Amino acid sequence: MKLPCPPSCPSAKKPFAGFYEKSYTAGSTFVIEPGDVNHLVFVLSGSCVVDSEECDKYSVVAGNLFFCYHCGHYNIEAAEDLTVVVAYFSRPGAACDIASLMQYVKENKDFKYQFEAVPISEQLAELIVLLRRYMNDGVGCAHMHESFIELLFITFRFYYDVEVLANLLFNLFDHTVSFRTMVEGNRVKARNLNHLAELCGYDINTFNVIFRRHYPGYTPGVWMHIQRKDEILADLVETDAPIYYISKKYGFSSSSHLGEYCKKYLGDTPTKLRNKFRKEKE
Image (cartoon, rainbow, N blue to C red; front, side):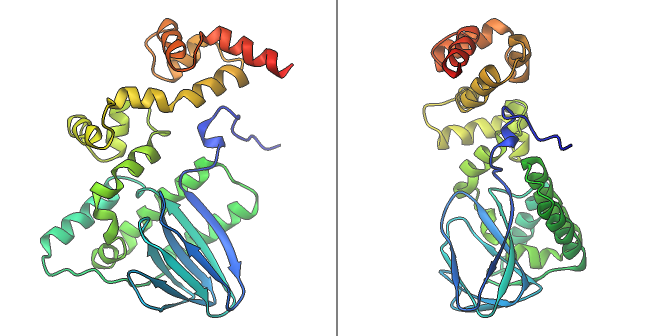
C-alpha cells in the first residue's frame, strides 16, 4: 500500500521544481519558451540541435547536458531519435550552490559567457538512473522531485570544476531578474518569513528591502499570508484537523488570529467556512 501526500499538502500539487522524461523521433522539434522556470536538458540517447538567442544550431550528442535560461527561447530539433530528461527549477537547490560561482565570475574579470553543452559525469549519470527508476515506478510526489533538484546541484558542486559550472549556469547570477521566481519557488517550503529569506540566500533585513522593490504595496509577511489562502482553505474543508492545529501549522499566534485572517482574506470564520463547503459537497 502506498502512502501519498494528502490533498491539503502543498507538495501533493504539481511540483514547482522537478523532472520529466521525453522521447522524440528524428526530425521532430520541441520548444522551451520563456517562463518562470529554468531548464537543464540531459541528452540520454540520440542527438539534437539547439537554436536560440545564445547559439546558432548548436549540436548536442548523447551523454551531455545543456542549460536553458528562463528568459530565453530555445528551439530544439532531434537530429536522430532522441531521449531526454529535463529538470526545471526557479533557483538552485540551496543558496550556497550558486554563491561560489558568482564569486568566481566577479574575481575573473576576463570571464566571458558562451553557450556550451557539458558532459554528464559518472556521478550525475548514476543520479539520473535512480531518478528514472523512481519516476518509472510512479513516484510523482513533489517532495521527491525537489529533493532530486537539491541532489543535482550538490553533485554539480562537488564533481564539476567551478569554471565549467560558472559558464553553464552563468545566467542564474542575475538576481534582479530571478528574485520573484526565487521567492515564489521557496514560499511553499518556508516555515516562516525568516526561513523564506534564508532559503533565498538573504539575511532578513536585506530580504525585506529587496522584497519591497519587487512587490510594491506589500510587506513580505502580508504577501505570504495572501499566498497561503488556498492552502489554509484546503486544510479547513478537506481535512478534519482541529482549528488550533491549522493555526499552528501556518504560524498564527492563536486560533483567533487565524479567525481574523480567514474573515479578512477568505470571507468568514474557519468553522463557518468548513461547514459551508461541506454542505455544498453533500
